[in-house]
Length: 281
Figure 1 (tube, helix red, strand yellow):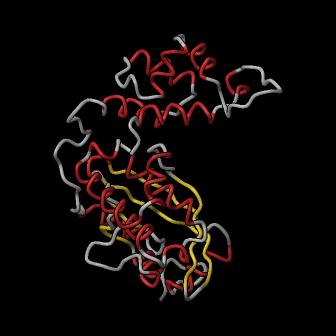
Figure 2: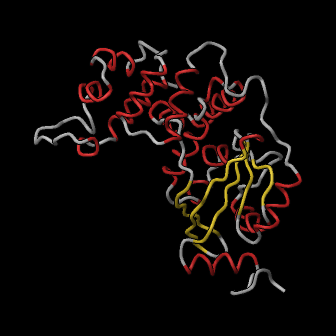
């Protein structure tokens, strides 16, 4: 992980905002992607030197007022604002948003009932280590032949980074890998001893494809988006996913839906579902 996750996040967000988005003119000779540090400093009402210190990790404990000003200048979303404050607080030694609690592997009865209601959609429950805790039968039929459910404690991150089948399963492997790293870093990652242990394991077993992402990606995964999977029985399946957070359980429910008619038909063949019917009879 980089020396300053806060600095990395601020730099990447600065580079992602265009001058036009904040009402600044776009000059013909801009070499910097996004905003310049001087522009962020002006928008946030602080010195360029201070913005530079923050990005370089030489100041890791800005005040809440500074964080609010930077969030406004960089047009951060509510989720990004929360992440920014967590990164700043995470610079304090021994701080963890989750304290000493280990990863929650218990599945509440109401969550199991929710999964049953989601059939036949492919839905999976994971914890902060990306361990698969429960899933619908629709997800099992999709994922089991791919190897995603192999092992005593299957993990999405371990599959993506350590299983050679992953690059065939995911045609857009780079994007999927980015999302897995972003999810592990969210919080931020290594201030949680359990996440840190998993990241150490992936560092050793995968090397640069993992560590390069840790050093360059902010820890804020997408809550929804497209994903392509190649299945041995039905070929390529195009899905869209939505992430439903269960914050009190420190778990997430990932629900997948077909992105087109061909993928819907493929999922129906996997689950035995007839078009227009809730379940196969």
